[in-house]
Each structure stands twice: as C-alpha cells, then as structure tokens.
Amino acid sequence: MICEVSTIAASVLCAFLKAVDCVGNAVDSILRNSQRINKLDVRLSVGGFRLSDKELFEDAKCIVEPLQRLRNIGRPRLHGLYEGSKDTPCFTGVSYPTLWSTPQLSTEKIRPGPGRASFDDYKDLWERCLSQTAEGPLPRPQLSRVFDEFKKFYTALPFVIPDVTLKSRRNGYLHRARVACETGDIIGFITIRDELLNHWSQYLECETRRKRNIDSIISQMLRIESNIQGSSQPASLGVGP
Image (cartoon, rainbow, N blue to C red; front, side, top):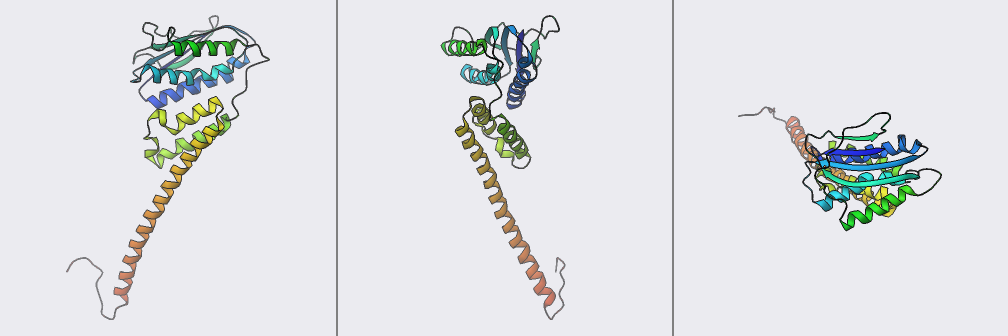
C-alpha cells in the first residue's frame, strides 16, 4: 500500500490544511478499517513553496502525524519529502495495487529526507509507532472534536475580521491549534483559543467605540435639527443660502 500526498502552493495555508485533513480522513475512513496492512510506504511531494527545509519538515510532520495512530503495520516506511512542480496534481492517494492506483509522484529531488539527523530520528520514531502490536488503531485525540469547533469559529472570522489571518501561517491561530491538538497539548490549545477569543473581544470593543462615536454624531445632528424645527422663526433644513 502506498500513501502519497502532493500539495501545491497556490494557497499555502489552504494546501497545507487540505493535506492534513485528507490524511486524517484517510486514516479514519479507510486505513483504520483494514484488518492488516503488510506494507505502507509514505511519500510527500510539494511544489512552489518558498519555505526552508526546516519549515517544510515541520509541516511534513503535521501532515503524517495522523498516520501515527495506526498500529500493526508490517513494514511502514517514511521515504521523505520531494520537490514537485507546479503542474503536479494536488491530491492525497491511498493506493491498493490490486484495486486502483494514483499517479506516481516525482522523486527526482528530495528535500528533508534520509541522511539528515532530524529526519532520521523522526522516521525511526514514526515507523516504530506504526509497527507496534495493538488491538487496533488509536482513537482520534480527545481534543479533535474541540479543534473541529475551533476551526469553524476561526474560518468564520475572516468574513468579519479580515486581519485575523494576517499572522504568518506558522504563527497563525489555526496552525498552532492543530499542532497542539495532534500532540495532545491541552494547555497550549487553551492558550491559543484564549488568544483568538481575545482577538474577537478586541474587535467587539473597537466596534462598540465606533458605534458610540456614530451615535453621538447622529444625536448631535438630530438635536440641532430639533432646535431648528422648534424655533419661533421658520427655518429651512435645506442646504445652501
């Protein structure tokens, strides 16, 4: 079985989140129902990302993190992160050779991969997790349902507060919350949630001040109009001499 993920940087955040969600869905809806997987090869390909190898590696770990819930995998292999092209189709594929297959990803140029200490250490940990014997895959992290609601809140905010997405992706609310969720860091998740709620509260306070200012201007306008209408001498409310 081959699990391949390809992302294109037309929208960095969108592509990254789509890849993470697709892998999580593949784990929950397909792979966890398999009675036994003798071999699982995982490759990732990216195209058009202007990120350092270190940044790409951190993103790659988030993408393959959901697969660490799998158990009883005969030969799990994490092959690395490869440089694709902008023409590479964006997809996540789980290929069963006897059923159907996905297009082969480019493996000509490797980015973070075998031979680098940080990758090799993570690869060993990742493969050991998947090869462990257990009754079945681990359940989704307990924070997953909370994160789903957090994501709904966050994705609704840009329609009201466009600047909520101005933080760089790595420091953005959704990315940090997802990492905290996958790693089970409930304290970190609550901290990020509170930051986003504070952002919302600051917006409401600002809007309240603006409303008070406008209300004050309207009240002044109506007060002057009332004084003119109530004066003993007729007065025109028109503009001009």
